[in-house]
Length: 153
Image (tube, rainbow, N blue to C red; front, side, top):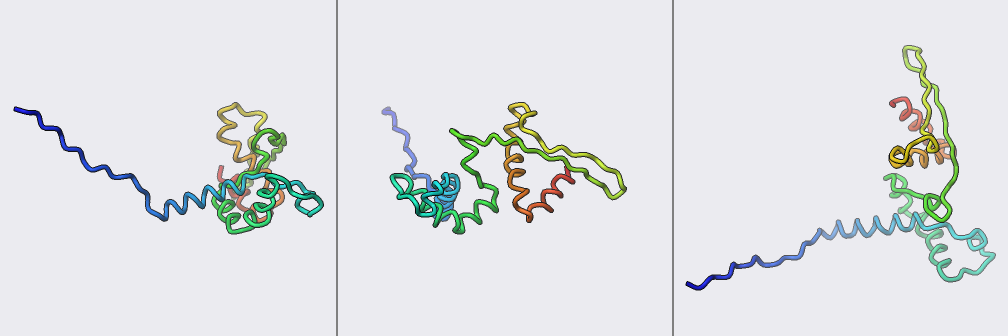
């Protein structure tokens, strides 16, 4: 009796819904636009002529960063700055302490994590807090949320 070949199921290509493709494309554009470095100041004020990739950096600075991409990146926490990456990462070591006063009058001192004092695994987890803390002094709208976060720890 001859052997019968097993029937193969028809191949279907995996496919995501169109709106997911649009969202992923938008997300990639937003993250890329946000992480590109700022153009040199002489280019920004028009004192120098852009060359090569300067055109991309100027377009990004003038049209993409101030657009709704900013709202998306900042409100979702996906923001990042170029100082996070080589060749010139930020070397700032800032920290703060807080005195938490509870309703019953007791107080507790809270030390914000200092990257210089953490192990590599701890730095991996807490580096985002340092980046957030760098921006808090300049953004007074973050102060209440920041204080509440510390109080809840």
